[in-house]
Length: 140
Image (cartoon, rainbow, N blue to C red; front, side):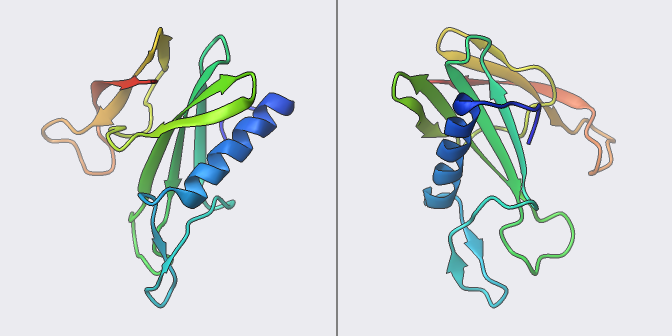
């Protein structure tokens, strides 16, 4: 789940992003027989948390397999922005246009987070994009 973080602030953020992932209507999963179900974070999902240096904002990226019968690379990416206030971590919004998980450092500047994502260049194999594109996310 990214770098090791401990303490009440991390536990509070973990609870916040687990609630978001399990309840956001844009995050959908299905049962093996094709019925809709709520998604949940288990050991199979990859969770990447990027926190601002002041520890007041965070981006969470969850790579998950929505269909347990899918073969190959049928993963999805869900992303959300969180803010910490005196009451703890709260969801700011789901980020439908995250562009992918960060392929480098996330820079938090004011109300914006920016990061590079991997994109294919002409001639790249599908597995291994070598290009980069900058994504900026409004944290409000």
